[in-house]
Length: 451
Image (tube, rainbow, N blue to C red):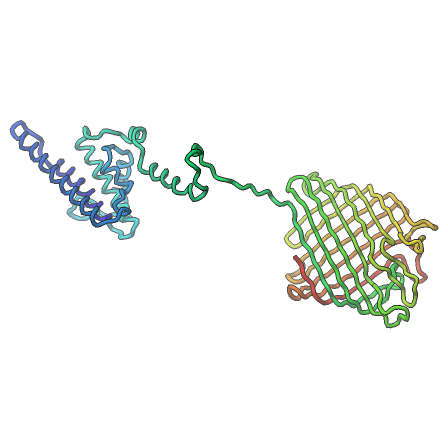
């Protein structure tokens, strides 16, 4: 198909050369020249007609559909500025074409598809250009006028393409409502919430100092834990971090004649923190942290429990500033609340007077300042260190906890955890031979899953 189109273009190109080679008319031979021109024109038209008839009978409808580039040959006679510039460029091109010896046209040097396409376009441009030079009176349009008066084939094909695509996107409308064609759009609101969690069930070995305020002893235990996080961040002004933590551990008690097993780790903690953007990594903060336990805890060989559900319930509300920063493997959040209210409540009357509560009172209210530091460090691919520090001072006494967890991931579902918990509390009764510093440690191995 392309070779036949090229042949047609070269025929027109050859005609212009023939016209150019003909001698100028003289009065004596004017009639003969006109007759020759009419005869030559008729032969050219007959040849084109035969070629078109042959293509129509042998080709499918898709094959005979006119190439938009051929509009310059078979459309309205138009002088294109691009034909001039393309012809000049083709004469300077050395990559696709080279001059053939003894020939008056350019010969294809590269048999690639790109070169073949360029050859066809150059042949068309040369033919139109020579025809316009020899017979300018035959050219009805310039390129500018043609664009204004005649709709280009490219524009027609583009409209046809759009009309073919639109019905596939939206259903056809009824004939009574065809004034507007629209595309149904669904706007999906962004989700500013990020949730995560961890659950584990592990065997542990632990050590508890003799002055640990909630009691317990060093032994082997079974430990379970749950951590849930739901954090909101609109990426502009507001952040809201929520964390729920629960931990419960049971231990056999060989030396305990009163109980078959006891709890040695029991904690329920809920933390919510509302942040309002201040500058860079700093935010105004409002934080509430509440902590208690779920079961009673007994010392060895005794039925007098030392702690229970909501005994104590320790709640702190603070207003201050929060600093957040993240690096590749390290994240840190520091919350400083110079205005902090602490409320300590003991639900069991039997435990009144403990945990810093004086006399027979079962609640304690204090004002002071607090600091919370949460950090995590991915030390290696399978080693992670998480740290939590919370400290409160009423400027008369200090209460502080430092929890450290080293997570050694064996696989997706197996891990080893080393948990070390240090505490300083000068508001409790100091046992003889001990200081106000308390310490607890667990070494755990078992199942662990994160999402």
